[in-house]
Image 1 (tube, rainbow, N blue to C red):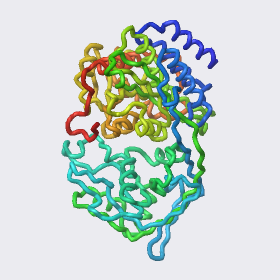
Image 2 (image 1 turned 90 degrees about the horizontal axis):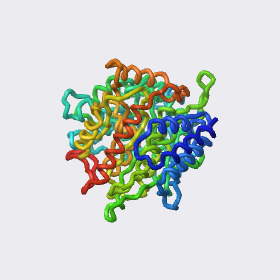
Image 3 (image 1 turned 135 degrees about the vertical axis):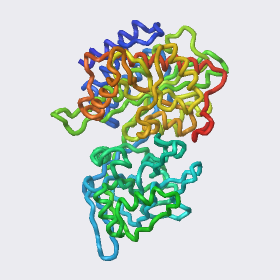
Image 4 (image 1 turned 180 degrees about the vertical axis):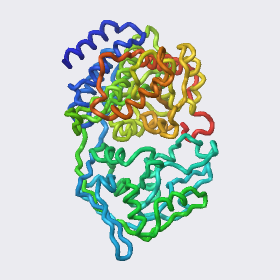
Length: 530
């Protein structure tokens, strides 16, 4: 069946190669194939991932988009290692004559970022609040205390406040993301960083943490002599109470202390000893990159990037007898848009002034690793990259009345995006869950981190002929029942109109940006800059 699906898409692409409009049917068929059982969930370092990247490259070639990787192929090799922490991993806390042992999975999870099969470490525990130093908000949890070699205990998220100008109010900033906590700990010379989990501070339960960190995760391979943390980990609230009990404190004590601007790091007079046992393997994986050259001799060296991650979770633990995590919505839909946009762009009789780079990245599900690698090893310099327009998990539920642009307001592109939305009779809706920090959780963020204006063109929330709460109810159902589950499968009755609209919006926006005299930029006050 997979061969016939692939053949049907190829025939359709050839038949309409000169049609520069966006086809919902093409997006449907790409989504169908990329999420079929034949591709085994598109796992990184697995057979299905190889099949997916080969298919994407073939479709770029059929569209007329040229190879864009360094070696004249469509493939940018991404040197990753897969790390799977083993059940025998040990962690204990010692104070005076008392010792508390913690069980991996139930009490704590984590990864040895030194990428060694057997890593032992020990250090004194220092609580550093939310682990944030943010001069723009006059906030510093470290107060110049030297934490070199220490085990840092932190909460995720940010200090709470009713002031909408303090840490952007309800919207989560990057300081609140767990990834920032590890990065800051490493910058300050810590030996390990453990996030003390509570459902309110994290925004999700311990089961989400345990399942996310309980499987093989891809990481960029360490360079020679590169320093890393011996443990990037999480500890459950219940285990945290046991740890803090050794110091005569409670989780609520530390939560209260972390909210105060005059907070200073607290040496808990507790030592942690750990032994990280890891199964490590090299992962053969790659980004897929294709280019349609621009028409302006001076500007064609600059690019508009369209991005979407191709990977999903591959073959995993069976649910109701199904072990293939197909990832139809997440993110076969985004890849399908990427392929159809490349075909439409290449079919334009006269190309825009700047070039278009179509980038399908690996290992998003493992923490944006493929896009992060591209940002560190760009095929086009960031200073010559106009923007990144990213697609990740769009919903096929009918005709859209709106579009959500995650982060467009951070850039100078927003007025242009508003004009195009008006042309297409679409409303631009705000992020309904700014406290979840969606801007920092998809591949555009890797490029933003490198200074490139970047945002995602997201899923619609309002649909023609449907009740006002239809989009929210469908999203909640997807998120609770199908997100990262084998049931995220292609359905024959899906209506791809909204996804076609999102693709059309992105095509028009990218064309207009490609034809502008000046490169877009960040709005004043944004933390990202070229």
